[in-house]
Length: 335
Ligand code: SAM
Ligand code: SF4
Ligand code: SF4
Image 1 (cartoon, rainbow, N blue to C red):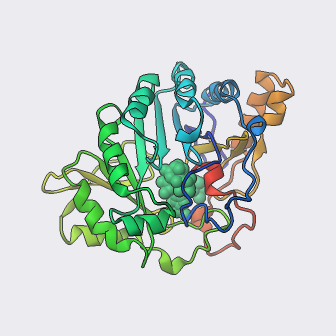
Image 2: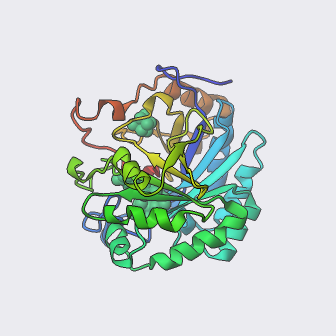
Image 3: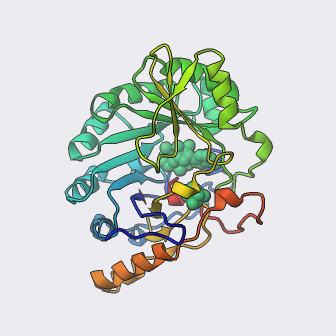
């Protein structure tokens, strides 16, 4: 039975964070000063097992979820991830499973195994072609050339591959045009994302935001664009295509043109906390009831109540309300 929240939004997509660990330390997500060697990540026993994730996902489908998105932390660090994907793919109601990764562990074999397990689509994050700029953004020494090769290797089974690029003024915005050029005619879809005030550690400063509109104008000045109809009303990216036939590109204007009105996503962290917004402060613990033997009817009732009481629309309120102090970290909730 489909359900709606207080703003009339149905529940359609579940984003599953499968680990809070990551091998990158992107400055905008997981700054090393806060999440360095002394930081305590979740111990194994606190992380939901594949069986627990699959059980909860099945219950979500009873409330309308048809699309899954695997994320993290870095999801490819989760041991035996293809086993989880095959369990999720076996749920009859699930129509689409996607995954977002930093691409560093995406070998051709990994891509093939993920596809064979039932993964439909992949998004790879990459903020620059220039190794020094990419390295500064993600605080890593992994060469963008390696990520570009992984994107090409993944395309046959998991394409068209989407590439997520977060744009920060003065840091990587001069890479916008080179990235657009690189992905024209590639069959992949570059998506330029506005830098967001997620979590508590990135010291977000609005002056570093480059609006999606400004980014689009910079690209349009070289290669004219025309809008493409959205695939779904809940799609976050505004889609465009190059008029000269070079392919598609997207813009995610989370800050300047918020899309809360069509936000039909719910997020489950690796330890089993449910969040109804990226900027929420408290999650609903589903691990404790699940491990203490609550039956499906009981858990379903918790999920239903949580969604039906949902009021979140932070991005429409940004600036007019105080910033929530204890916002969940992006690497926990998965983006
Ligand atoms: N580790 C994987 C990756 O980076 O693709 C998956 C998890 S990551 C949290 C998911 C997405 O969130 C990435 O595309 C990343 O660029 C984006 N992201 C993280 N922090 C962000 C921020 N402050 N503003 C905008 N996007 C952000
Ligand atoms: Fe890791 Fe992804 Fe966060 Fe970067 S954005 S630190 S790759 S979880
Ligand atoms: Fe959805 Fe919250 Fe983002 Fe609005 S701010 S689009 S409700 S996650």
